[in-house]
Amino acid sequence: MKLVLDGAQQMLARSAADFMAKNDAILRLRELRDADDDLGFSPQVWQEMADLGWTGIPIAEEDGGLGLGLAEVILITEALGRGLAPEPFIAAVVLAGSLLSDAGDDLKAGWIEPCIAGDRRLAVAFQETGARFDLAHIETTATAVDDGWTLDGVKIQVMGGHLADGWIVSARTAGDVADDAGITLFLVPADRAGVSVVRQSRIDSRNAAIVRLEGVRVGAGDIVGEIGAGLEILEKAVDRATVALCGEMLGGMSEAFDRTIAYLNEREQFGVLIGSFQALKHRAAKMFIERELARSVVMAAARAVDDSADDARVQVSNAKARCTDAYTLLTNEALQMHGGIGMTDEHDIGLFMKHARVAEMTFGDAAFHRNRFAELQGY
Image 1 (cartoon, rainbow, N blue to C red):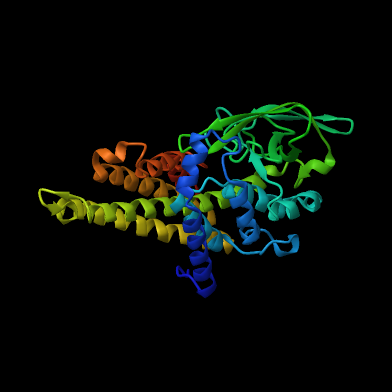
Image 2 (image 1 turned 120 degrees about the vertical axis):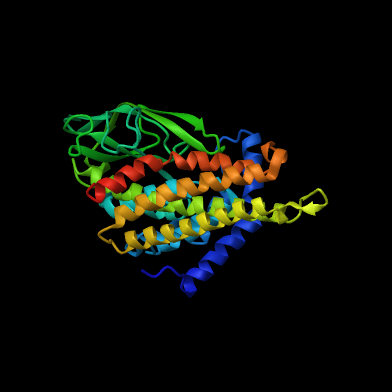
């Protein structure tokens, strides 16, 4: 497996890094947080991302996208992670957009093009209370009526769900809670009667949402994929989003590491730079090794999914478990090495620790993915 960037990928990575440096995402995140901004991200920056073609990267060419893979997506998310950018790229593009491109044949015409253009945003509502990362644990019901279905249920922690233009909702059309079969995906526009949304703010200052569905009417034209076959579609979409998130985690831990090394080389104690202390050198070396190992597994997972490799799901879980451990370690060490100033809100280093904690619990924590890794390997 080739774990190096080709010329085009190097150009994309540089372009993403330059874009994020120009937009100063951490400052923007602070301003939006302190103002309790309704949207939680910058529409102007989102439109610029769309104009650069980022919102079409994982979308098939026949649907108007660029038809690229996760190998390119992680270059974007790594840059976003370095700046802690609040824009919902993973939620709206990688998770919802590519899911609809893969399976939403009858819905593409009205949604894919405006989503790529930056005019509309979708979110995927699949998590429920008590599910604990189990995608098949769905209590939301789709009850058959004469001309379609009625949806009832509550979805939690919907990434990018606040003020989305529509949600792809998983609901049970047959079977019992936690059955693999009988799950159907529906696209529910935001203006559909019976939908209510409660904004949530995570500890990293990004938005999520609780989406309640009470007697929401949907028809045959709102189905994404086939009736009762939604779990496989959802699993593939969540795996893609997990790899994209790992790219973002890689960016966050890399920025935290770079800032820490810079601090070690400028902070003096007892008349010498603290970076000259052997104990801190050893800890910094450990951080570097963990960051580089994380980079390797993220690249391997992206290429495995792009190639539809037999061990793609194994590679995804390997990447998420290792990135969770590495991001937690690096941000813990970064905060400690910055000393008391690192504990203040005025200093940026603590923001990376907060993001690490949220990323850890998104799409499955390390324990969940180690267990999935073992099960997929036959243990």
